[in-house]
Amino acid sequence: MPFCPKCGNEVANTDTFCNKCGTSIQEIPAEGAGTKVNQVAYAVLAILLGGLGIHKFYAGKIGMGILYILFCWTAIPGIIGLIEGIIAVTKKADANGNIYI
Image (cartoon, rainbow, N blue to C red; front, side, top):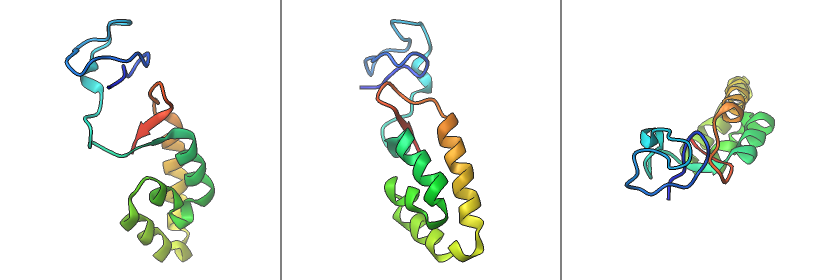
């Protein structure tokens, strides 16, 4: 079941507004719109080991993880990993602490 993007209340798939806070549910990502990962784990991996693409492997994006490893000597994946970690920290997590990547 999806969750309200504002308050984290569980809502039915057919609801258009949250029963608790009245927020529009149209903002909820559809299943398959991205990979659902734990926000804290993804952010820590991206910030600390982003240069090796470990956060991409964690998110199930194996091809991107390999690409990060191939170019880790340039330090560009490290910079991008740091940015992706900061973005992950600022994203709104659902009630379970998950975000969509």
